[in-house]
Length: 141
Image 1: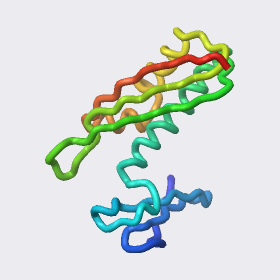
Image 2: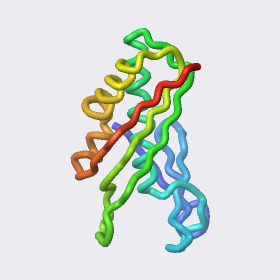
Image 3: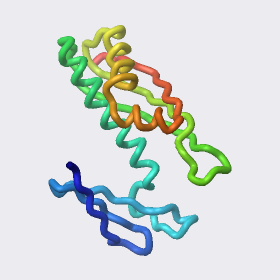
């Protein structure tokens, strides 16, 4: 079982979440709603979780396929529902940038498997109604 502890540490809405291993994540609300830009917005942490989860899966799959990933970057853009409370993620577009001697078909298949089968964060967002699209870019190292 995982345990997360949350403490208010900065202004009204500046929080620090800590896991059982001592890792921390800073969160805050937007200045428009009283925050001070201390950290991630809570909804942004979901996109960051999607990035980390799918990145781990993609790299693990490519390693099993003997593909050498020299560097790895991602860009995620998300659009939330308009005029609803709560406002969930509706459309998410994920760009995977892989660097190295990597077969493009294997990279595309790894992304497909990560987002469609292995990444628990992607599954959670999809079950909540989000549409997740992806683009894969393979760059020489």
